[in-house]
Length: 213
Image 1 (cartoon, rainbow, N blue to C red):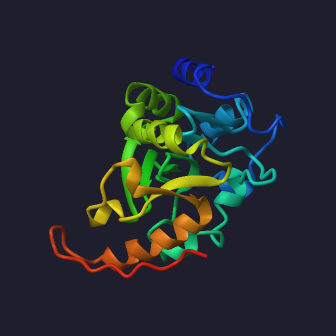
Image 2: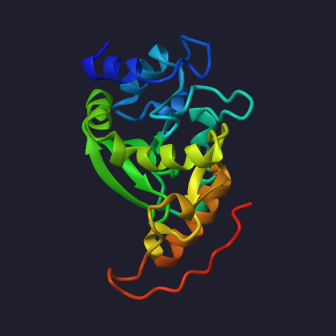
């Protein structure tokens, strides 16, 4: 097992799903790092880390736990972003629902409020290294910890979403966070991303917020 993958797994939860030896459908294999993802999920079939701030999807859906195959079904939430969330394989998320994904040249983050991708690492092992080195920023752990001390554990299938969107000046504070179902949150913030996609940086914006149901 790659070194940093082993180190990350050593500080995270056990398998979300006990099923092992699974394979992703053929449509996923056009990504160069698919073998990396298979290695990750066959060693730990979905898991949580840093008090649930990091969530890696298992292969398959089990109850309220959405699997990576279902999470990447365009009809679930990706289509809501028009073309902004295309050409990526989403496999994990931070506490705010910010996505980690595979693109053709490496691992990227995807900001659900802006629909923007940012390069993070060349492969899964280096992604694990980045998470270990900077988990407080990359997973949102400090806010996950503070919010859960006051409100209790984050339920399966939910993330902490800002009441006032971060892109609109919302503060990274526990009082600006509320529980929302992951799919609902992604759909609602797709609406934000589409509203601001063509607005120049620094411009004033007036967002129309909608329910993601």
